[in-house]
Image 1 (cartoon, protein in one colour):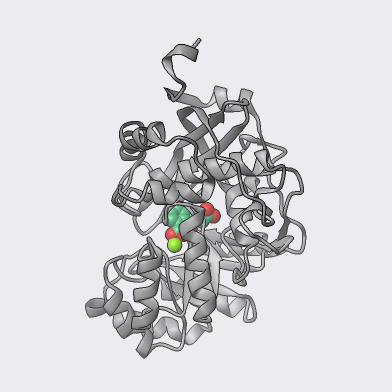
Image 2 (cartoon, helix red, strand yellow):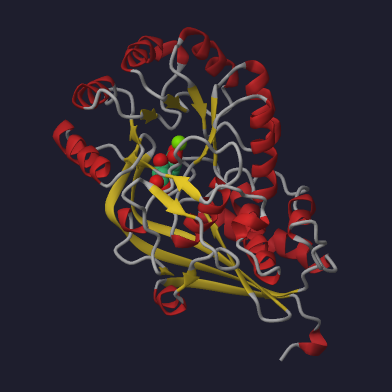
Length: 386
Ligand code: OSB
Ligand code: MG
């Protein structure tokens, strides 16, 4: 914060809501298809009435990682709230330390942490991206394209995203739906930055031959081929491949990143704010990656504008040199819950906002309209409750 010492934030209340938004198109990965996105939104409100927003990226089922929107709801209402109620004033950098005794459940704790950073940036009257130490004013954008019903459908999608200026195309793969897709995209586009994401669907024993075939297409990276705990197999694979292995699901903390780097299990790291528990942990991974010359990029989880705004802030940090899965609201939503929606320039970039906090206003009417469940946790002493 430009050398200033942040005043402790005194939280008045924390509001949780579940919203339900229909995706424009179903999004298929190796672990399933998402048609409606159920999202837990966290609102933190301080004594002055300032409001910070966070988005929990946990999905409907425990198939990307172990968390779900239900587990996140319980963790926040039962455990995060207890910790916050006991804290007598907090600063954003302290939140991850305070929540550290909560094992795992980082998407739950990370949503609250990010909301408090947003709130603190507003109180400091500076953009969130500057508040976390970001430097880049323009963020490079890539797209993640779900598994398509046919090669023709995939090629059409790829063509459209390239026309829009996106700087990197990532396609989802799963066993049996992989080499042919990559080959057809590569033949048509010999020079684009192209990568694949397997979401843990392969194994070294069974699929080394397929991995070696994928190695012939000049891919920028192959993201998370094996199961999250399987660092050793990723290291064995990386030894056999020219293509960089990138880890997503395997990296839940700076300790995981450190192990992966030491084992040479990857050459690239995808940092997702929610998966690692918020900005403080994400920054630790970012710093470690820079020390070890590991390129990093910001991953996405089909976020609404709130999560997207946080991802944009994260992407402004040094070291985020590869295009992220940070794309326009309109790729997923007919109408986003931020106003104006997030847009991408014809160069495939997003400009970091100059207004204070997350920089994208939440459309509260729209938010209300898609809310299906809510809870409010008050931290104010009983005597001042209205
Ligand atoms: O592995 O990066 C992933 C979406 C849901 C769950 C996991 C992943 C993804 C994506 C979409 O690839 C990225 C985006 O939000 O655009
Ligand atoms: Mg991924």
